[in-house]
Image (cartoon, rainbow, N blue to C red):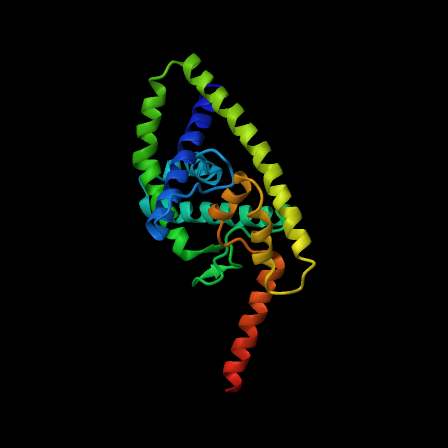
Length: 232
């Protein structure tokens, strides 16, 4: 039980750090402070899950940096790919798309983002995790358990609220998909932008959101352009 509580605490720490990284990257790129992620709170669960998987399976490779780097890349790539796939199937939208970047797989993952994950795996196993584990071990078990329970309740509530918000966005997307024009995403944005702050926040957090039909239209356009270039 002690280990379970410890790992849950680490999950929240790494999910928060992931949120900070996402917000930081967005600020550097767009010079705007945007609450990144699906959830309302300052947390990106995919980072928490990824870090826990790295710790559970790769700690034994702490003295083998090359193996740790490659395995961390592999774990994070599989996690990101299937997260993208499941979210698209559940909510009928592609929340991020790397189709315009080199060395991508179905637009869900790309080499450009995986290399930093490999580096992050090295840093987590050898530096960050020993630091946080040492701090958490100094906290009495009852106090740590109480903190974990409170955070878990907030996390579950956030997931429930966010699920219904995204579900409403999915309904707007399904409605927009009846329109066979290339303005699907623009129409979805216009509809959602008229809703409350929590809906508008998601559009800011995922500015590259695409519907499946728009992805197909983009692929068709790219193929048509390549055929035209060959004919010329």
